[in-house]
Length: 130
Image (cartoon, rainbow, N blue to C red; front, side):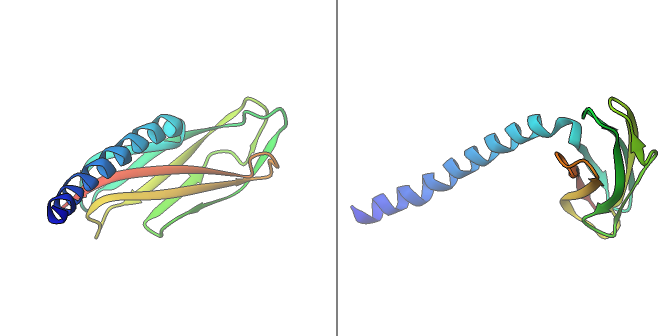
């Protein structure tokens, strides 16, 4: 009897974990929509480029102090270093998929002088195939 219960536990436990992870991932995509971009399936060695819109939603002018990426394979640049309230700039992100395989996620951090939101995180994703 103990073996049957143990067998059923090992059979159904992984299935419940997979379902809950998929649900959380879908919810996160809704929240991240303006800050995340999924390139989908791409061939290894492709240079991927996406331009995010960086908007100053505060009531004060902000200064963009720096941008950093999570990996040397990803570079970013901003078209403006100072934004008035309501003003936007383009944040271009380039990801070189050379030597990558599978699902890859990279981050871009925009550092500002806004005390309420000093670091804005952007995410790019791709499923790289050989």
